[in-house]
Image 1 (cartoon, rainbow, N blue to C red):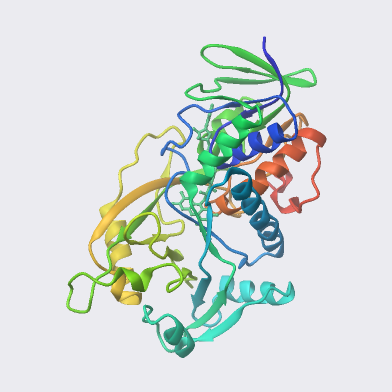
Image 2 (cartoon, rainbow, N blue to C red):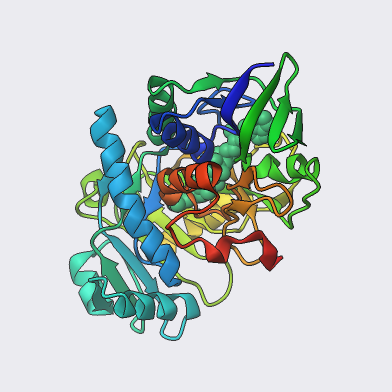
Length: 382
Ligand SMILES: Cc1cc2nc3c(=O)[nH]c(=O)nc-3n(C[C@H](O)[C@H](O)[C@H](O)COP(=O)(O)OP(=O)(O)OC[C@H]3O[C@@H](n4cnc5c(N)ncnc54)[C@H](O)[C@@H]3O)c2cc1C
């Protein structure tokens, strides 16, 4: 049976990053991915993901501070453009809990940001049509990660450092074997000293094989890209939504899901989505159709708040969230088998940390601990 230092199961952003760091540290790594790397059935595909320091909980800010330089280092190492800094605008009505805690957290941690009222937002970003009472936070470090390119780069660099990446080879059976592990696929069995499970939406059934039933639910979420339009309904000016003139944005809602969006990047339209609006689906579900009622709601949102972006629908796509009950991640060792680390249920906001989570999972696989603050992601909280 081939023997590795570490087997990683799941080659989305988390698994590719884990394999990358382990291989770079000189470990013999096998990464098993059930489909092709970069496929569109999980959570890591698409043109863009938000990266930001502006978070409500201090440890996410600290983790984001650690993730930024790792993405930049990866860009440098691979000669790839992955991260475009655009600045980020959060806005909400006064008293909106996630907005207020984000503002308090940034202040407490000494992160520079600007507080903008409606007039100041309108002056800087006239594309928004917001109510008088609205409050904004502008944080200049926020930006966009080119998601497809990030995953492809992590996987390519993992290979370059010697990792063995096997695509279209699902792990069928995971087993603790003494102090190590064994993994069986349709074509082979592999042994390793350590196992890292980064299986995203498929994690729950897979981890049940290891006696662990985590309270994860999978939702099918939807993003849509809309063409700019002008006041009489004709084609609008795409330049007004270009990075540099238009920020990534998050609208913190008092009720209902938050909306978030991007400047034009990757496709010729403004991308908009609701956070956690989609239906719960089975992990094995192959259903990926978009829902016209969600697309219509997104268009209505733009008509009301960013009318110059409310043109024709250009493209819509689904993607899956793997949610925990408190929306925090799970990054931990298996409670019974310390040779197994788990790290990917990221409740729809994990991509920005992907390169860092890979490094943390590599730490857990190598030495069972990490210097990064992951206490709030422990399994024992459930
Ligand atoms: C619409 C949408 C918008 C998002 N926006 C943002 C954002 O703006 N900012 C942000 O930070 N995050 C965002 N996220 C969240 C982020 O994309 C995810 O947290 C992240 O991609 C999760 O990566 P993953 O590697 O855990 O999961 P996945 O990418 O799903 O990877 C898991 C992999 O495991 C493989 N696998 C499963 N079972 C097996 C098996 N038995 N054998 C082999 N392989 C297996 C799967 O095929 C899959 O490739 C968004 C997510 C979605 C869906």
